Image (cartoon, rainbow, N blue to C red; front, side):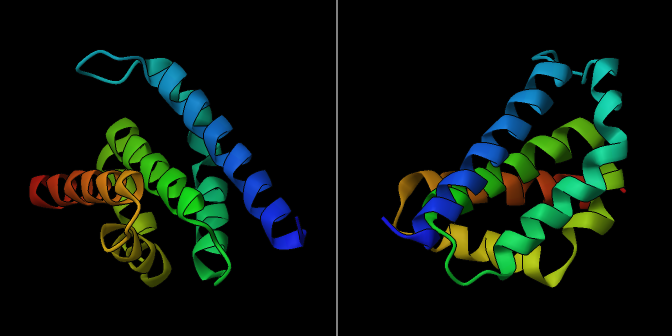
Length: 124
């Protein structure tokens, strides 16, 4: 059990916490609940955290899965405003890596997040 494993587990815990907060505030209705706007000021920081993980070559499949799921959740919560934040090389690279992953969860979440981004691009 070394520093890399520790860091990856710590990051995964943070990503899961962010995901829980986003999903909890967004609600499960067709339209996002207005409460989700409480985290709007933090979205840039969340995305730079994901970018930081994307640029670290030691990230785990679990990190990729959690990042992709959170990206998808943020896109469904905040719509087209997310496009400039997800249209960056590290984020796109992470999604590509997820889609090519041998881990089913990473592949599924990366594919879903990519579809959510595509929906936003087509709508704007």
